[in-house]
Length: 231
Image 1: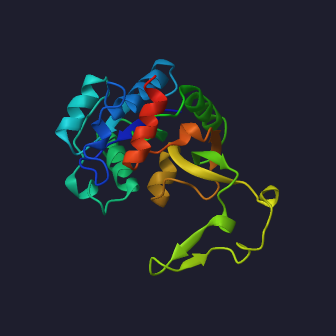
Image 2: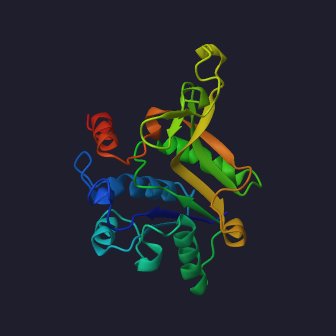
């Protein structure tokens, strides 16, 4: 199975300026995912590692850390309205027009630098050993569930997701859930092209530790990752 690894990194970030290349322990955030992709390539588990970006500054950083940047992503699939499937299909089309074909895509988001190389290796081995169309990474959540979750329509009044939220259900009676953490996505290309979706209806999964599942979206997330990584 030939696997293309994509590290997606578009320009701009509303929460954290230049998030994808912000400094984390003396190197840009995107470098962590690039280095993991290249480690997998060294182990012959993936065949190519690219960065899909619309930003020349990010491209320059990616090249410096060893990734291939074969194109700059078109602006119309790099804005807030674009879906992830758009840059998947763009990369597939780019390579197939050059008669380069892959069987699957591994997505490594720069915002998940805590993922472990051992987990990636296991994920790829599991994926290659089955006929499933996709695999995602998850973590086990023992506390958060509908009994402690609310929405609000006006910012003042809480609306419980579960009518038993105030019935005193013991924590031991809660069912744990598996939460998708965004760290690892593996998808077969025939499924991506046919369904225009990244995750199949019944995906494989691999568990990660909760601490390894931090997805940097806010400044607080960034500071927590720095505390954990900068030792």
